[in-house]
Length: 370
View 1 (cartoon, helix red, strand yellow):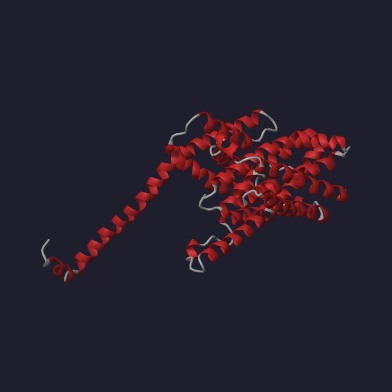
View 2 (spheres, helix red, strand yellow):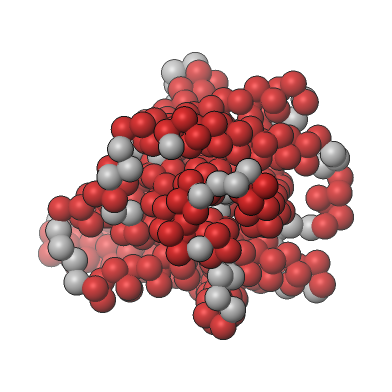
């Protein structure tokens, strides 16, 4: 190129337009390449998580009362501790633990029937509020007393008070968006599995010893047991009447996931802005309400306002199960038994006390209402 060529181009508008037309698509292609490369890097890990979710779902179909999500978590723990997963799977596993989890929570909104929840009545709804609010605040206070890291105590509080592993991961997505403390999320999920599974045996035994009626026992289970699947397992042991009561009360607790995560999002936004002394760009601030919470509430309202065909609800339930199971498998892949041993006894003590606290608040509340 000679020094005269730029001047020549300046006097040739048509050539300039042709050059712009050539550069524009080139830039678009250049911007697409990183996105395509990133998507391609995630495919192997996502495929593994979805395959594990499918296997967990089939297992749940073959063994009545066995939760696919719990199977997926256990499967992830076994796989990651029995073998060394290749690094090429990491991007997809991380994607599943974050994005697929949020998609699963959104579809969880289709499972909530507002009319059934409101049908519990104001006294029982007040008990649910006390269980969630008292469980979270009490567990955080106990965590401070036991000197458990604040972030871990909060995740345990949300998981044990609302809806188990999904609540843990949902809270972590707003309080730790950059995964700086991913080990805390993994620890809290593991504790949900351990102590929630123990409740499947302990709560029916306690109900028998206290001579509780089926509906009362089921209501107690729905108000205190951690995971939805664990509630279903307890209700199955107690009987059909207990199961029906347990599921509705548990879904009332699940509904509170949205305001709790939204409140944590507002708190995290304030913390982020305070650390940046007000200089944090708006695009880098956490959203006031996480998009997946908006999606969750939108599907709750859709179910309440529109009569949906049966196939829509069935498909939504299947997608929710698959997405959450894939996410649980991904989280399970982060549970290293050797690392879990290093956390010490205090998180386990906190988990035990949190279980006792939530169960006691629920038991007293259900007794008063009954």
